[in-house]
Length: 436
Image 1: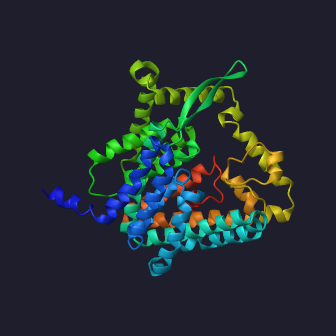
Image 2: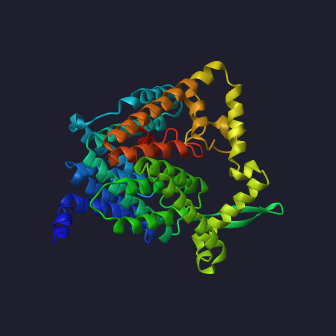
Image 3: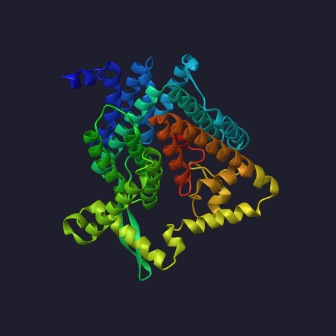
């Protein structure tokens, strides 16, 4: 009965309370009107855990359900958690270990908030700066303790499962025009959002959870990991996000060459053969093609292949290439000072009125957004910090072969990849992973 002893150590009061906090949001799929009750319950659990390291992991719940969990008076649970986090870090400051490579990028963000956001947006600018500071400090605490980091990853995986089930069971989805025929958008697919507002956001977080699962060295066997991975892959497919799929495959190639250097080529080939077989089966076997998430994905893939064949760049990129071009042309018309130092306000949460009038939506490209916000110099500092920390983690992994460093490398890669298709400056939910 060694397995009983092994599992018994996980059933502490802190872990039980944390588990309740993680699972509780799933009830909102069936009873969305109870969101305030769930937020109050998780806030109370946070207070009970504030003297424990498990308190830090409540952050993950607020990360996945930041828009659903709202306390009375309209106060978001993540904001309430941030107030508690500030108190917790004040007493735990000796346990912080900040990543030196991101100190300079952090000060670039601070200067930008002080010079552009706060004078123009007031309270929103202050809260944006406060959120960035707190996620920086939180990463410093988690990186200091590898055991805590591994537990963070396990809770993250569990929260991703809850988020996925929340999206599917609560039908948190929308209809997306996937195919253009005879001058009209004629074919629609259903795209599930998990607990997020955008299927690409959901794809980013599901991908993170998958590679945490693949990388973690735990006592949990692959007989448990494989079903969890299969479920997460289903949630990833349900987003019908092709950028998320491409991210998964390219990250898996990176992961395979780091994890199994001598076996990487056959492993990657096996994956692509499996994907090819799945595509063929989905096209020819009714039992598989009648599964909604599969048929929706195949419809989207076939549609995109058709656009590629027609060399329709706009539709291949879901109209984003035109938006990128418009913002890039605007960047080129600026003064040299603006080009170098930025000063525009193009954020995931706010778009300057001049861009609202002249552009169609957001840039949908983090790097163009960086150039407009913090200029060439600021962007170079952020990307250099990203490069230096990645090289450091890579060298550490090659030397020690630790799962923590493998997770940090793949996480950084996915952050870079998704920056090519979504806006996340300055969004605490995404910059948390930049600071890791």
